[in-house]
Image (cartoon, rainbow, N blue to C red; front, side, top):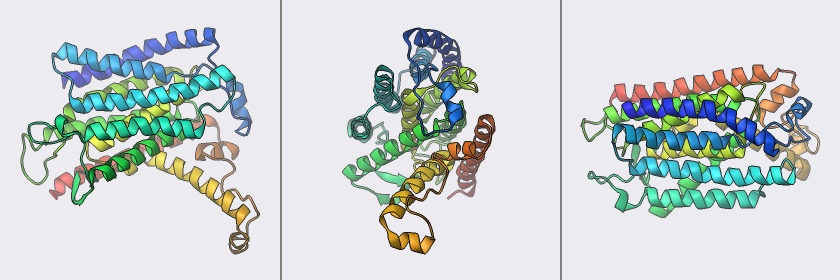
Length: 369
């Protein structure tokens, strides 16, 4: 437990102070954000705001985690190291994307194919190592499982190893892109991340207290290294707290794809390593809704242009848009909501999703099934 407190506290302090330094450096170097022209016009005033602040979050988490290990004189676990690998690896993909935007002074960085390739390489490497038998503990548990999971492994839903790795890739790329889509307003993704990573810190602590290694019975959890995963989750929570001080409206710095891809990847990694893959859909409900808004917008737009039958049945014009603009938070801006109002209400929605997810998690344990 001391490692959790040290990890979260150190990450908060490093992020709070380090972000101030990053703002100064990135401003001098001219690392400013480019803004999409088709978005809300109020965003044009943000052009030139320093970006790539996600680097501070990544450095804060890594330094805080290993410092906590040194202070408590404990060894890093395989699960935590894999989670950090995923966190840093996807952060580097995002860094390349941000750097291209800055160097070429445009709102688009890596081409979609290049970004997907980078995410795929990191995700597949993570999946293969997470299922590697050489990393199994003395109970035979590898960091991840080949079973599909909700609150724990669903025993009758076992997958071949190759299929499980592909599933991990889908979860990781989907979640990292969902976090990226949600990072469109000052403090939105950062505040939501505090809530979801805080929730996973509690999940990991509970799984450690009810581990099958120490407490038997039908309600125990076969999760490898849950307490060490809690250290990483707490460090990410603390780092986001420190970063939010500077990222809240009006933002003095953006996390960029560097931060959003890293945070999304870490969230997916926690879901996989804690055997709560389907529970992520509840806890991360905000990210699911934001992603669905983009999918619906693009699908209806394309189908309405290509299909006359669709236009006739639904009585829409070619190129119909369900929302004024996607992702969803920009739609509410276009309706006249203030940016701060959208952010706070989306935080409230995230809080409700987190409460529902934790409620389901705890209720299942109480029910004993």
